[in-house]
Figure (spheres, helix red, strand yellow):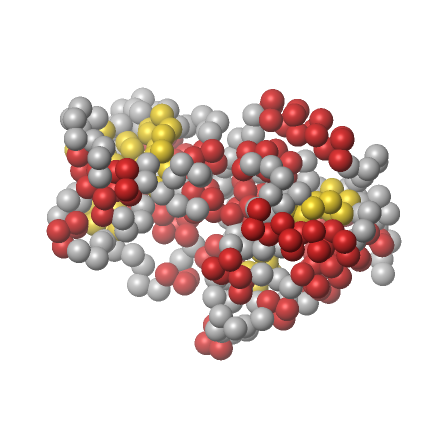
Length: 342
């Protein structure tokens, strides 16, 4: 039996998606230790993802560089620290502030010796979902869960402000609202579905849903792609890539009737917001490992290449527009938005 009053610190310095993928961990810890304190340290640019979660008692930021200078005074304030990743400075910091540290096995014995539990990674990670992998660290404490949903909490004020903003840039009567996430981050652009495929899908949507409007999402780095697609769908799409910060984008996405996106952070965000969604996954990063769990209105489309033939050159264009369109109709009709058949 896990003591209910444990004070536990979780350190996860990661991208948006990987930060969201630890939210089932945070929920499980608080459920097991309701009388204790749960702290979380995240990357300064991603910590906003965790704001508003009711299970987190203290939330702060850290980086491997800053970790070298922190935790030298004040003693061990935490019973346990759970550290994700392979950054030795984060583990050394955790060992200064917590009585016991749990992490996956590290590359150096000197770092492993700092750990109370050095948890082995699964031998075949390609067949283990990332959430289940993350929960291996809480299992070392005897904390388990069957709730694998991702979590994100927009504030009522954020939703109201975004609703006012949308009234200013959307055409009157725009419905349904459909979000396109057209790009992953540049170092993994092989995961991107072609812009031409998004354009074809958008054309079908606006032909069959006469009042539909498409919002083209993304960061500043994908603004040019978003503007190109906006031009192809002239008058029926708005490029908002790079226009809002992370929490503003999340508030916008909360108003979507459907989300179609490649495998990247906003796709996990859409799942946490419980938006009906279609996820497009490259064969190097299968849905079985990265697609959101426990999302009833999710449809997954994997690249059709078998695993043994998959390379980074496997073209995402091999996911046919017809397949995506089939799921678009299914989800919009299931969301009480009707369209004629084609």
